[in-house]
Image (cartoon, rainbow, N blue to C red; front, side):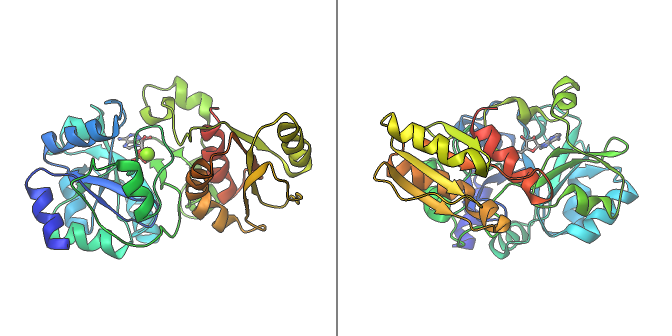
Length: 318
Ligand code: AMP
Ligand code: MG
């Protein structure tokens, strides 16, 4: 399968593959036409840059120029893993990959299938998440297949993604470094090694296209997602069901009684890693169950909760 995937990529094809964050839809980063196919397959806006995935430091030097020492320190601490570093790009990286930006987002994934694929190809792979633009990301082979509907030339299998949310994106071209997208590697984790500015949605929007992806719709299922803290969740769910809506609930600490109008229910029982890991899969399961709305318990925005709430709020259209 791996050799077939490499041949497909070398012919300009696009291949979906598992990573520890979410499934990716990849192409050769140096093949601008293959990159076009990714944007087309996903319906992805052209101003939303792709993350470049590498397997070793020789590949890093091909895509990133002038890597700050502090960024190298973070690579040593967090790679391979769910941290994307935004760096000055080399001339070799086509503008298509970075949406015309002078910078490139680079990550070294830890998933064995992703690593083997990049190693076997022998060069970096540009890959956004394996889903139609605006939809929840795929975190399992089955979801990637259902979501991509034959648009990828091939999908590699690799079990459910261990993390389930996209990587943390850190802009290393500004001082202090700035989080552009929260993820599994938290602000607290990064602060142990470098000075970092927390994500500020307002500043990101005002800044000169710092993280273009932020203005687009993201992670949205076909039904409304309503986020509620535990203490209001029962009342909200009850009032929706009384008005005749068939709902789903995602619970973290709240307790709710079964109800015939509650057709999907998942309890993460206070386990934040599980919440992160199964959030997108739950969104898609609730959709297949046919819910009219999903009531989702909100959590404190600290540690991993920051990334979980970022995805929940954007799924809800915030
Ligand atoms: P996705 O691959 O769908 O998870 O999206 C990748 C995201 O990474 C984009 O939406 C951007 O927010 C971010 N990103 C990638 N490359 C850059 C870059 N050069 N500068 C800023 N943000 C980037
Ligand atoms: Mg995505």
